[in-house]
Image 1 (cartoon, rainbow, N blue to C red):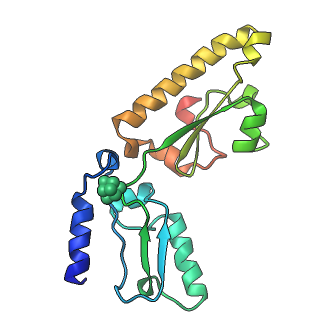
Image 2 (image 1 turned 180 degrees about the vertical axis):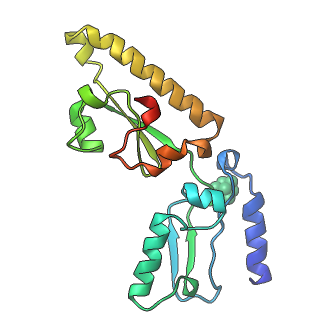
Length: 183
Ligand code: SF4
C-alpha cells in the first residue's frame, strides 16, 4: 500500500469526526490497488465489515466477487469502498397493521400472527405490530400493543448496549425467520 493511502487509512481508523465512531467495532477504509481502473462505492459497512474492518466481506461482497469474475476480473483488480466508513447503527422499523407488514415484510405475514416478534431484514430490525387504531375497535388489543411496545423497548436497550451485539441468530435470519427468543 502506498504511503499516501496508508495515511488516509490511518486517519479513517482513528476518525472521531461523527457519532458513528461510537458504535463501530472497526472503521472500514477502502481496499484495492491505487491504480485500479474501476472503483466500487457502496453505502456503508454492514455487520461483517464492521467486525473485520474490510469492505464487502459478507454475502453481498461474495456476490460482487462473482459478478467481477463473470467478466473476467478479480476482486484484487478493483478498488472497493463505501461512502460512510463506519457502520451506521441498526434501525428499528415498526410496521403498524397488516397492510404495512405485508408491504414491508411480506404477504405471508400478518399482525395477528407476527405482532411483537422482531425479524431481521438486512441491517434493519422489523417489528410487526397492530395498528393503534385497531385498539379503538377492540379494547383487548390495547394490552397487546402495550406488550409489543415493551418488546420495542427491549430492542432499543439492546441497540444502546452495542449494536454489533445483536444476537447471532438474528443476524443469520432473513425476513422469513423470527427470533426464537422472542416467541
Ligand atoms: S463515518 Fe467517517 S466521519 Fe464518521 S467517524 Fe467514521 S470515518 Fe469518521
